[in-house]
View 1 (cartoon, rainbow, N blue to C red):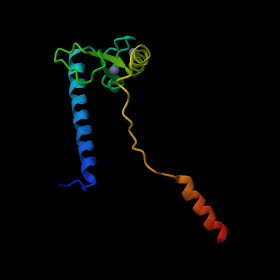
View 2 (view 1 turned 120 degrees about the vertical axis):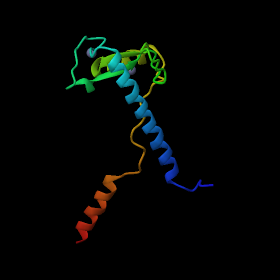
View 3 (view 1 turned 180 degrees about the vertical axis):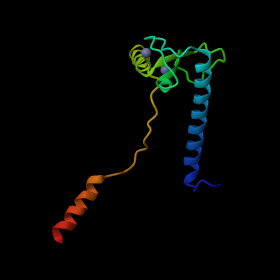
Length: 123
Ligand SMILES: [Zn+2]
Ligand SMILES: [Zn+2]
């Protein structure tokens, strides 16, 4: 068993993240091919220069539901996408909570600062 391998979980997490990113790129590209580059809410038009501000929204809020005909996708600008999710959060249970990006790290900058000050004081 390699249960003592501390890098194993990290690798699994990294792989899962990579797979999710790949999947996301996949449906995004497909959605951008199927639909005109226009926000479905505010009708803002997008070009190659700013298309990264156009996002793919899942109508049923299930990112794993990606039918090839694009029926679960809606292109929304960042702003409208945010709005859409806020509305969803107030009207329904938040089952699409954003993943916490930063792992909890016991990082205490002020403890170090205190040490530095102490050292200066005695010098
Ligand atoms: Zn919009
Ligand atoms: Zn969405």
